[in-house]
Length: 232
Image (cartoon, rainbow, N blue to C red; front, side, top):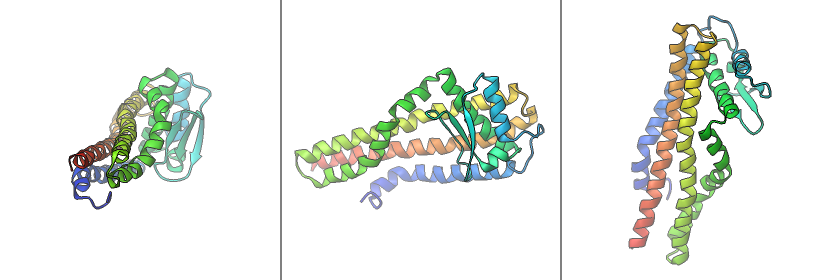
């Protein structure tokens, strides 16, 4: 039912289209500027380490991981993981992505509030995102008070997952703005190289917008379907 319900498709299709377009832009921008060497000749790992040192951060490890655009910062392990192309690459794209992830480490070090909130709700959102729809559809099948309870529980659980996606937006936008400022202030990129790095990060930001919008529309779908069951 989840995959074929016309209402679900109508509500989430715009987000899916935006996600595909955003992913296309990310691949295009990263591919284009991964072939352009930055003037400093520094690899992504070197730039990330320099940014961390500039911020006075000495307890964050930088690791190379397989895959493309698998880069992320793990605040619990205090590890900054960079994909091979970013870790070893001395391109404009590698510089932008590495600085973005270093920006997350700086957020953590400085106690950036939205990152703290996102970290705190992760266990709840993981459970909610996995269990919300199974519980929801069981609730739709049960035409009794238990069914109504399960519908409300599912909506509440999925709302936590939506909250996570929404909170992710300021976290990611702030990390990107920090990255560009850090690259500029540290002299790791020339002024004319900041624009290409910004293009890569802006394209990546759209993927988070698409994810948040799709999650929100999925929640609207659940609320509408639950309301329709109550009125039957």
